[in-house]
Structure formats: structure tokens, C-alpha cells
Image (tube, rainbow, N blue to C red):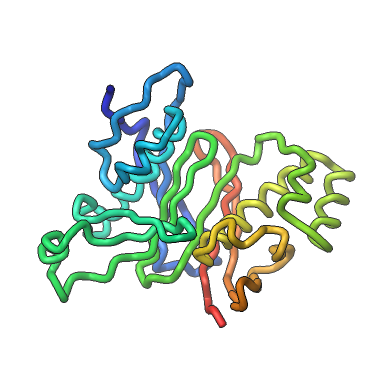
Amino acid sequence: MVNWQPAGLVSPLPLPESCGLDDVIAVWMPVGPTNSDESLPNLSNVPLVDAFEASTFGTPKRALEHASARYALATLLRDIGFDPFDLRVVRDEHRKPNLVWRDHEARVRAGGPLSPALPEITLGHSNGISIAAVSLNRSLIGLDAEPLDLPRARNLLTMMTSGEELQYLEQLWEIDARVGMQEATRTWVVKEAVQKACGLGMHVPPQTFTVLNCDEVVLSHDGHGYRLEAYHWRELLDGRPFAFGFSRLIEVV
């Protein structure tokens, strides 16, 4: 079994200045080419990889995506003063990733009771790239990306939208299918980012809230109301256009 090696550099991912996200830092890196005939790589050399989760991967593609996202996060954490080998990523019941100290000794090395608070994190991967971001003020955040040059099936619309939002996208698709696909992709990445920032993932169905023409998203789930800020932008990565969505939780009531 061959040890995993990064397919490229971890690079800063610019966030729109209009977002005012001074406490959020994001990075990306290429996943690298995958071949279904290849054997699964050994991920034990990659910081922040969960050994049990890694053991469940059935394809090299999934293993490479996991490894590159964790490696990108580890590089980012090292840049802001944390030793990634002192940390673990654990998932809660909604599969939200969280940072914890690896053990008591690791926290002691970081200062014990005076150790810095661990930032909130978000991870993702899509079509050859992995992304990671941290919130230094520990706000819950979500980041998502999808390529804009990838064809989309029209039935995606009913899987992620309803009501006025669905009607708008259907009409746009009728007028210009290419523009409709791109707007559907934008909508999808923002909704994914919102789901991540809520900490609930797909437990919040994307059809139950709208991101149409709004920088602030309001949704309800399990008797609670969530208010979030949301942003979207485009970025050219390795010559390929990607749509990005970012969200931050403002309050839960």
C-alpha cells in the first residue's frame, strides 16, 4: 500500500471583501487524478485523518478527497499556530466536523487551561479540489464549491428548491439552459454552505428554505429558528471556474 502524497500545494482561497470575514481563513488544494483500478492509498501519514472513517472508503477517489481536505486543514492550522498532530477531527450526530485535542498531553503542551480555543472548521471537496476553512472567533461556518462548467440535470431543481425559488430557476432554465445550470449551481453551493453552518447538514432539507436574492437566510428545524448570513462568488482554480458558497450562523432561537 502506497502512502498518500499531496497532488499540489495548499493555496489561500480568497473570500469576497464585501463579506467582512476577517476572522475566517480558507484554503484549497487539488485532489489529483484518480483511477478506479488503483489500490487504496495508506492515509496513516496524513494528520487529522480518522482511521476508522478511512477504513470505510471503498474507492481511491473517496480516500484522496478525504486525505486532501484533512491535509489542507492541517496546513491551515499549522499556519495559525496549532500543531495538527495534537488535534483530531470528530463528527457529531449530524456529521458536523469539530476539532478536539488528541489527548490530555496534547492540551498540556498547548498550555493546559490557558491553551487557545480551537477554531470552528468546515471541510469540503468537489470535482478535483478540496477546501477547508476556520473561524477564529468560533462562529459556526459552512463553505461549499461546485464547478460551473459541469452539466446539470434539470431534475436537480426539484431536489433542492420549491415555491418561488423553484419557479424562478425553471423559468431561467427555459430561457437559457446554460445560465439556468449556473444559477442552479450557485443556489446549490449556498444551500450546502447554509446546511453546514447550521451544523445540521442534510437533516435540513434544501427545499425547506430559500437563498433567492438574499444575503440573510432564515429557516426552521425541530422547533428552532436559525438566522444565517450567506454569500456566493466565483473563482478560477487551475483554469476551471467554480461557484463558492459561504455561510455563517448568526443566531438560533
